[in-house]
Image 1: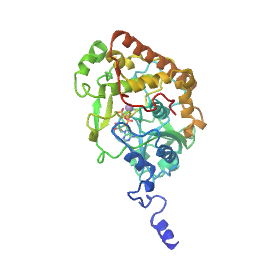
Image 2: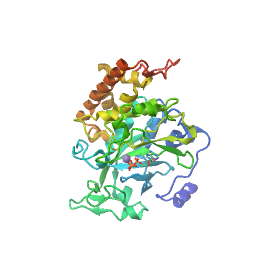
Image 3: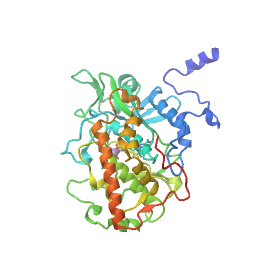
Image 4: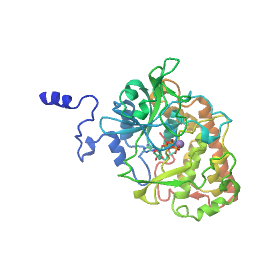
Length: 392
Ligand SMILES: Nc1ncnc2c1ncn2[C@@H]1O[C@H](COP(=O)(O)OP(=O)(O)OP(=O)(O)O)[C@@H](O)[C@H]1O
Ligand SMILES: [Mn+2]
């Protein structure tokens, strides 16, 4: 008892927990189990019982510190928990059902916290498992950011708005100004929290420029937009000329088309796994901006290359059947998020846009099948797994 009291005295509220885990997995916190479970082919296993623990952990752990995360262009915070776990926070900036202004270019769009959450669910339902787990959480910007931050550049930007809400804007390249505040109501703010990947010193990552990157210019077209045979060149260029890299890029285009994300300029891989590994689907904040129209150019890699993984095609077909329609399984999956109680994470028009876009992908595959003989990359050879079953 005395020992406990002494420990409490030595470690007041603001400190980290004493580390008492061993090499026994049972003693590991959820974030460490997540890190140790990363494989060459996926970021997590859909059936891993730790996944529920991890999301619950992110949604409920006491926040010990909040600092701005450098790198990238928009405001993000790095949150730390008492057991040394960390999460990347993106704040709510606009109402969930606000549609991106049609006069804004994709590179001027805000990031959306609900897009980060929905992208994690969608990626998992597609069987990719390449987005770090993300949950929604209602935080108190005063007690869980302002009062605990050691980041002076961040704390300097706090203010009380004319409406009486606590707001801040931080420091970053875009939208970090008094004109674009992030505001609580008056303290409560919806955010997304993504599990942090292992530290770069432990698991260095490589960043790859997407061959189908947009020009990020109002006037310039990218090469792929001018050359219909662009994929012929890509197919001959390492690492796209070997293994699963090209079909993985096409998987990523399929995910992006479904959620209308035009901002996939780069992607990352874990260096340790070399070129034979999955692609991380990080940064989905600009997805789900518009439900009333589709952006066909996002599907260009599929249309130009006419290649698709067999497992992906089977999953897409399954999700187009009335019994397991994508919009229905997404709706069901998203209600598990803690923020779903406030309002659905994706509005109905966004959900039905998923079904419409899925039909467009299957149509594109069919068009390919009329033009080419070998479009399917058989990644299921000798595999009698569960790809024909409903995703859960
Ligand atoms: N879950 C994560 N764990 C660790 N690092 C991450 C995670 N998510 C993103 N990052 C890193 O943080 C950087 C910035 O994140 P993100 O791309 O989401 O922000 P951004 O402001 O949209 O950036 P950009 O403007 O470059 O697109 C990424 O390049 C990535 O390397
Ligand atoms: Mn981004």
